[in-house]
Length: 423
Image 1 (tube, helix red, strand yellow):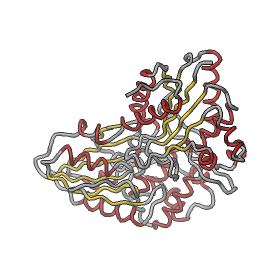
Image 2 (cartoon, rainbow, N blue to C red; image 1 turned 180 degrees about the vertical axis):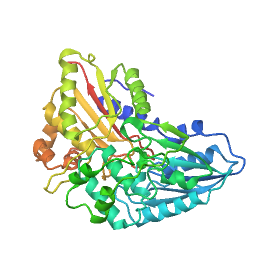
Image 3 (tube, rainbow, N blue to C red; image 1 turned 90 degrees about the horizontal axis):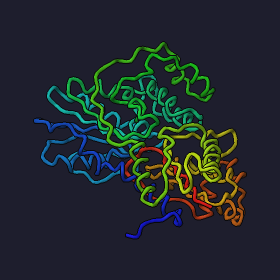
Image 4 (spheres, one colour; image 1 turned 135 degrees about the vertical axis):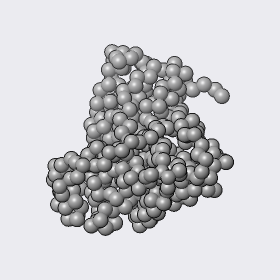
């Protein structure tokens, strides 16, 4: 295969993205993290965008083990399995299938006995895909809360405090249902800091915010919060149960950034890893990253060109009162970056969600280059106005810059690469 060189910026950026996704492929990484094979039965429970792919990888690794169980994944993310059942449900907003899957998974957990091994396969998206309301809440309440959270601008950590408090299966409650069987959790992280309590809202680990006062978050969510949810969130909190966990992280954002960095080095480009846990408003991060890219171009700091700024994490997009267009946090970041760069020569970038879906769109993300805004103007679009309308998808669609991967069957959150070339 012909080596990719820096004079092929789009191809090089895409190769880095593909390497990041491949580093989190359950088929490649899951088997190395399995416990010793059980003598008896193994019940497999799971939720997330990678749940079905993880189940298939487990079946392949343990062809001679008595496997059974159920995992739930997003519509379109199922893969064939022979022993572990797979359900599909809605994401990012739960639906009736999300509730049914959660009830069935909880029942299987409660049916585990001493001597059984339970393996939980947990990945991003599990919060919506395995949605079981606490007593006093309805599924409609959970859906309303979820829609509100997605528009709130809260960090993923803040959202998960709410989700755990309102769930009958998250915040360690699935693990409590499994006892006294042995529980091993295999997880793919999609959250800043790889916090087990945040991945799918932590169904198999203690809730660190179980006794926390959430009244400040309730106030920020405003009057549209359903009353039943408001009452539960403001009720006197009870300390969460504490218990030992066997939690194994099989893939994480940092691992994927390191894989992308190797691709960059192979092309003679210096990788600069800025962190795997960047958060904040997507458009603000775009402005910050534009400043850093200019520093590379003008001063050779933090590295001389050719260099690539690599980062992961999960930004947010706060939607105001106006009607928003189409787009996710990665395309919003890129459009903000392009507007801030104003066609700066030699700077190209890619941003995408490693699950293949940016927000709720069908694109993983997009690419930009020095000519992005000029091509947008040729299509009758003003970059700044489109950014203000949160319609980044439309601009990148018009300029044929979207990255379409389809479901990747993994999820280590967002991947961002800003490539700065000499001259």
